[in-house]
Image 1 (cartoon, rainbow, N blue to C red):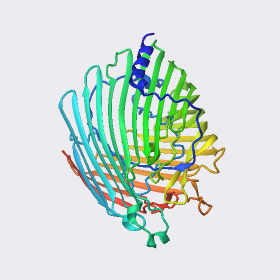
Image 2: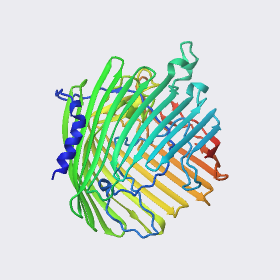
Image 3: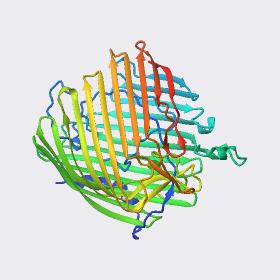
Image 4: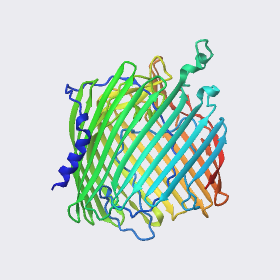
Length: 561
């Protein structure tokens, strides 16, 4: 075939000049710490009606549901190495997001809200669609907390986000560009009360700001009858903190598919990442390139996917130039109706960047060593499907083997910041996951999901900062398209950290976090909302020495136009 070489040449032409030439043997990363960010995201996009394309590279086995059954959304995707990360915001929790579809014909809105802890929310969205094939969207959002759970404004924080999106649609393709800016301001408030009372304490030294600018542009197929389906995206992200640490990351992603017969589809996924991190005297030039060709065979009874995942990583500072190939095999069997039984194996090199680590723990120390995590093998099996009465389920068991498995622990002697500790040996992680969902047409939906983790590490004493159990229970209810209620319960247990200065081991208390948000539509253009977060008022610590806010609430009004 000509298509596969053509796609490969197209991808390589975008990134071939960026390949590093160093080829010394890889070295093991040093145990250190770094910095992290978290963002609170609320999005609303204008709906643009186009005939939906058949995304062959996302094709799943046909289930043949009845007209009354809701489409299942299977969430067991190949996760990057955020194993056991609950991603809880230990300060102001964002109001649960949710919109009632088609409540009104207005797409633009402004929203204002306030709450305890001197919290303020301001948000706006504007969309322009004067031409049938061109749309422009802009949004801005600011959520801040003037005081925090300890020492007033010394534990305050704020998040600001600005987005501009342009979409150009034709019968053959869709072109989209995105420009964004994020600013996250917070404090390293995990200090002792004795230190806060000492003359040497300076509140200005505990402040941190993370500023991120990103630009992305992409093109994808919009013609359903095309034999070739494709999606190509590229973008640059620039991150800088208050202490002049910075990271520039250029990423390009290609997904394409070719239908060979009615049952066989050829797929290719390719990624190229060129990254530079600077932090004081440390400069890292780190690249990763991935090509993953696969073939998928689909019949009424089963689907088989097989291929190779070839990955190259380079790190100039550490002298790494490593290329690996991982087999990919996935078998999905449909014994009856909407019941699936699946099993498979795969492997990959998971990128760890300054930005990705900040996305998990924003209290990281400076000048941490960045190293990718190699998932040499992941063997999994499970089942998923739809049951009668509106129930659906998923269950999966995974046994994965990693090198450079990373964890987070308080650094020393400054325990207010966290280091990234890597296990340079072979780490084995057993994950047992389950999910049960109940849906009552378009009015009520409830999902209970739990993950259980078993860590068998080679060189680290513990899987620092990672829970052994992570569970969520999410619910949403709509009454007459006027009242919209969401309720979420989070549970995390088994988080262990150690103060290496005092040599004391801490097992953090289990986390129970219940949040409720209510939206009430007062008319076609006006609605009111109130959100209650951490209803149990548990001042838990997701990260050692960082106490979360107790019961906090946010209320306000929204106007659509």
